[in-house]
Length: 150
Image (cartoon, rainbow, N blue to C red; front, top):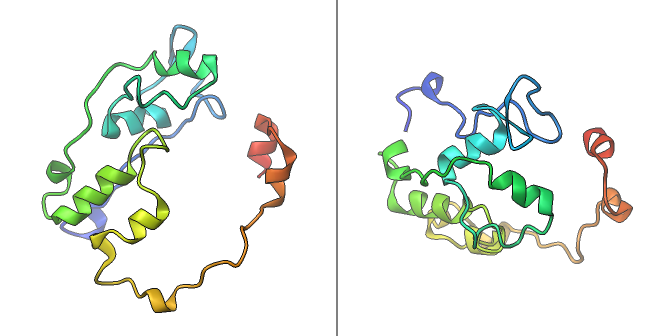
C-alpha cells in the first residue's frame, strides 16, 4: 500500500516499553511513566484501548492499574490505513491485532484464513512430533534482568 518501499513505515513505531525500558523523561500518570512513543501507547493508537472484557485475562493488580491510565481511544479502520488492501487482508489484521490473546485468532485459524489460500501449500508443511520446549521456560518467573539477557 505504499507507493515505494521508501514510503513504508512500521505499524507500531514505539521506542520505549514500560517496565523493561521506560522513558525516564516521560510524564507520570498515577505514578506510571507515559509517553507518546511508549510501545503500549503506540499499540493502543492502532488497536484502541482495551475494554474491561479485553483486560479480563490480566491478573496482576499493578498491570490492571497501569492499563487504566491510558486515554481511551478507538480502534483504527485498517481500510483507511491500507486502502489498497483486499477484504481478506483487513479481516486477518483485525483478527490478529487483538489485545486479549484468548479473543485473538489462533495460529491454525490464521494459517487457514483465505488470505493465505493463494500461497499456502499444506503438503510442504512439517508438523513437530512433540511440543518444542525452550530451556528458559523451565525457569519459572523471570525477572527483568533475565528477560533482558534472553
